[in-house]
Image (tube, rainbow, N blue to C red; front, side):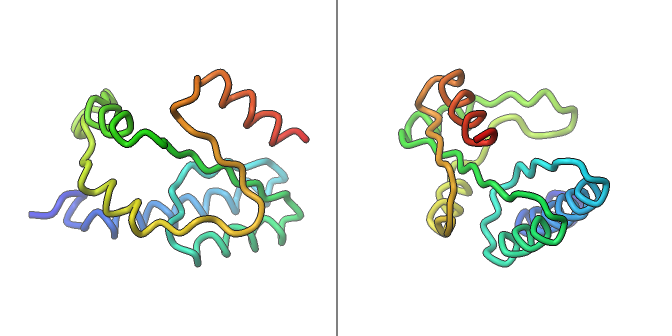
Length: 132
């Protein structure tokens, strides 16, 4: 039996990406900002988002979050407690490794923050990037 109502995980991510893109379009159409918290592994999705922002006259800024310490990354993933009823708690490290291996770097300007640094430092870096 497959999780996510019969959908494979990759299909569920695809559906999630489509929903997120639709919501972003609606926000931009209202003249509001949109923050898309999604891995955007698919290059076509990235292109759609850039095009959407451009068509709306909005600035498109990318923040890539990484964790350069693989053991720390795995420990955080596996100890994660979401507290969402009916949802799994720890993550699947094998899935993360598979997705990281396929992940293509962003082209163009993008800010990368490393989760090994303190949260306050990363937050300040991101806020500076977004407001410059």
